[in-house]
Image 1: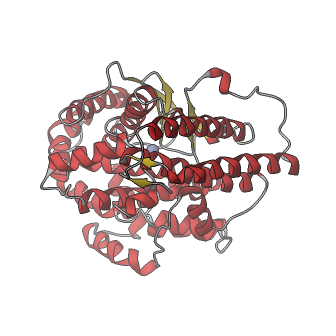
Image 2: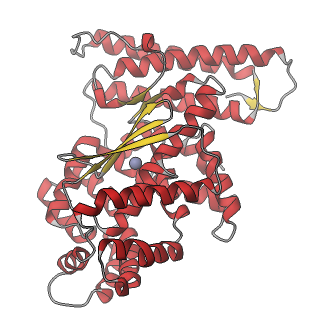
Image 3: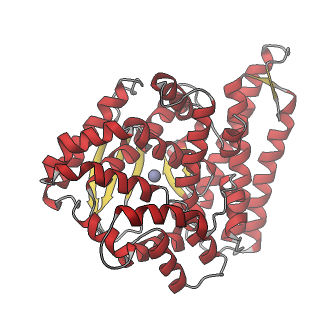
Length: 430
Ligand SMILES: [Zn+2]
């Protein structure tokens, strides 16, 4: 690793930059090549078209291919190691660390396409540079007990919670206009703290038959396609969450700022590709989830729901506080999804048992629990990026002075995370 702020010659800088840019280009091409074998791995790419490998019919993963991919990755890692004598600014050090961690994650991805099956724990370390905590059932019991006393009535808690929640479903016919309205609100609020790149834009589409709730597809040129899945009904709070998470100050803002600040202004092409199963996803999901709370602190969210969204949806505004209290508690059950994924992927629980756990500890309806399992089967340990990602981002911002009482500092640190190369383990070191 190279160090910050040494005394070497200025000329080192440009040479360092050239070498880093070469490694970055090779890294992009490597990610694109791996994408030939796992298409969803390349979540976004807006770099030079000629860097894309020809879409050949080569779908066979054999030992020659694995050897060649591993050799390339090792080569690029070695080239990074050779740069250890250079001095660098803070942001250049971040860049180096980012590329290093992304390349290490690629080693894991190559093993996966060659057929390796990692445990949940190993996979989170190798793909996402992260060690999320393990929680026992007791951890969730306390939250469930509190929910129990907030939701009196007959039947089990999962049933009561889902019946309660059904009162807050957003009418489908009004969803599109509400989503646009909330997105504009999120955009305006964000603009109070962050200068948006000029001409950034997004489109919203409604889709079905997907394992996820919503998705941001970044197309480059500061443009996102945001898809909202209408398979399951959306509750009123989810409209806010999705607009903030997928749009502002979540994924659309993150992707647009990165394109503007790192790719266009600095020419750091490694950011023109987004490998889905890699550390950048923890930063992306963590900042998007943190962004939801940043833009709508509890009181402000309550006010917006009561004054705008509840009336818009024709819901009973007297229930806003009660609803908010319940969803806040349910929010604290987020890590239960990790435990379901851990036990299911490690082969400890069968599908039925995992389903039962998700219904009991995440309070999912059977339908929603099925969706969650579908997500886990496809995206595996990716699920940690939401809750552990949030915790790492939240912790980083809080310990650096971005507390709830200092909103300006909170946004400033948040913007730093969206505009500089970051890694999950780096967030732990402040
Ligand atoms: Zn997301």
